[in-house]
Each structure stands twice: as structure tokens, then as C-alpha cells.
Amino acid sequence: MKFLKILAVILAVIAAIVFIATRFISVNVPLKVISHDYKGDLPLETLKLPEGFGVHIYATGVTNARSMCFGSSDATLFVGTRSEGNVYALRDTNQDYIADEQYFLLKKGNMPNGVAFKDGDLYIAEVNRILRFKDIESKLENPGEPEVVYDQYPSESHHGWKYIAFGPDGKLYIPVGAPCNMCESEEIYASMTRLDISTNQREIVQHGIRNSVGFDWDPKTNDLWFTDNGRDMLGDEIPNCELNHATKDNMHFGYPYCHQGDLLDPEYGKGKNCKDFTSPAEKLGPHTAPLGLEFYTGDQFPIDYKNGMFIARHGSWNRKEKIGYDVYNVLTDSTGRIRKSDIFISGWLSDDKKDVWGRPVDIKTCSDGSILISDDFADAIYRVYYNGPEEKI
Image 1 (cartoon, one colour):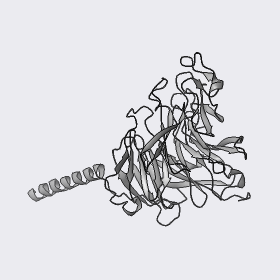
Image 2 (image 1 turned 180 degrees about the vertical axis):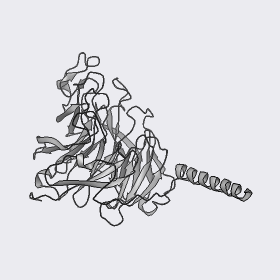
Image 3 (image 1 turned 120 degrees about the horizontal axis):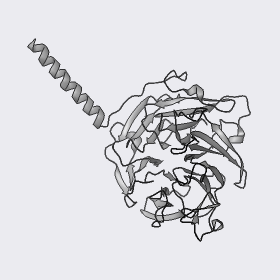
């Protein structure tokens, strides 16, 4: 009897140690391999896609999956988070577009939403600083501590999480959201900045941007396109969130004076004229919360999608009737003007607009031309592919 009590105590201690280790220490956690014929709890059958397109699970159990970037190939996917504080690496070791390994690279970070990969190194954006893991793919199992590249960004958490990406000029683009719903603030806020990682020289390149959490460059022109989340507390129908097009540096996109290109703010717009600011290329709906933006450069989808944009509309949080919760598609002509736009994927929001089971965040194009979509509500990443009868590129 005494022996059994001692054994029970030993087993309890071991269980406690294992719990603590898995909760607080960065460890490798293999993902359950899920077949394309997914039978889990996520209702993929409710997703509505154009004819010829399909969707399957790339990974589940990726808590609060937000911004993504690929490593040296799409066999490694890096994923940042906002509320969870983790940065993950997902590995697809047999290239079947289902992740079968998961690694924790960073835990308990300060909203490490943004991730970007360049020359073998992984860059991570926290609220006030940029971190770097050098030669990351060689040490996924034991990445060590990241080095601080730059730590002079504001520390306010309101709109402080960041999306980052390297531009065609090789510099790191980093937006700085407004530290409020509506306010006038120092120049660094409500801006898009550009950081030269070789010299640590930072400059402000765009102004009047309330909160952009997604951007990309037109592969035809190298112009910058970005999403922007409109202000709250003006009712359910205004203002629209925005898709913006920057054709040069130092443009001003209106915040806090003018919204959606034609609506003066009732407080900060007094004495202003919306014509003095750059209007959005497209209004994306009131409170749709557009986040990730990706130009499609793959060769799998029908030719009409080539060089068009996919936008993840995260969905409203305080609107009486929910809106968004979808992936939007925008097509432009050779001059960069929008010629067509429509919802590409819907179904995360129920038809009666009451229930939500997923919220798309970011989009990335795989080497085979399919796309990945992250979801911070369902803790999942989806792969969308095309196998229909239409003409391919």
C-alpha cells in the first residue's frame, strides 16, 4: 500500500513536470497529419468557392494563426500571431501541402504578428521592435534567442501589431497604426515606414493610414497596394474600409480628416477637403476589417486571376449585422485601374449573418500556384487549389 502511494506521488510529479515543460518551454510539437478528405470539426463544406476550385486543410492547431511567409521554399511556412504571442514554423516534409511538423520559434512575444524572410533570415515584428533569427531553417528545433534589429518603434499596443514585408527595393516596410480610434498624433503614427536593415535608417514613406495590416506590390508596376481599416463609432454603414494604391512616396490617404475618400470626419475633418487627400482605389465595405493582401502570381488558377489581388476580410467586430469574413478578389487592367472585384470565398459567416466559425487573416501563394489562407479564429490554415475545366495559364 505504501509502495502504491509513493508510485502515485512520483507519477503526479512527472505529470506536473511534463505539463510545465509543454506549457512554458519551446518544444517541437508534431501536427496530426490530416488527409485531403478532412473529417475534423471545421465545417469546410460550408465554404463557397467559384466553380473548379477546392479547399482542404493545410494545418490545424496553429493557435491564433495570423501573418505568414515562406522560407527558402514553401516546404517551410512561418506564422506570426497577435494575441497568442507565438511564432511558429510549419514544415511540409513530403510536399503534399499538408503540414506535418510544427515548431515554436518564439513564445510570449509582444504581439509578434508580422513575419518576413530574406537571405535565410526570419524577421519578426513586435509592437516596438524588429527581431531576427539568422539562418533560421538550419535550427528550427533549437532557434535560440533572436537578435534585436531595431527597437525604436512606438510601444502603444492600440493598433500596435504589425504586418511586415520586404519591398522590391530590398527594404523592410513596416506600418505604424494610429494609437487610438480617432486622434491627431505624432508623424510616426498612421504611417507606412521603410527600414534599411543594413544601416538601420528608417523613413516615413506614406501618411494618413489608420491601420494597415496587409500590403503587397503590383508585379507589373511595383506600385504599393495596401488595406486600411476604417474608424469605428460612426454607425454600421460608415465609413468603408479601404484598398489603397500608392504610386509614389509621401502620399496622404486621409486619416484622421477624411474617410473612404469622400467623407469628412465630424470632428477632425472641420475645415478640410477630401480632394486634398488620396482616395481609395476601392471601398471594401463598412467594418469588413480587410487584412492580408496578396497579388496572385501563380500559374494554377485560370488566367483571369493572374496578377490580381486576393484580400482577406477578417470581419466586423461591432456591427449589428456581421459583414466580411471572406476572401475578396480584385482585378486590375494594365494601367492599374480596377476592372472587376467580387467575393472569392465565403461561408465562414452563416447565411443568417449570426454565426461565425472562421476569420481569414493572411494569404500566400504556393510554388504550385495554390494559395494558403490563415485563420486566427479557427486556428487553421487552408489551401485553396484549382482543378476545374477552365483554361489555365
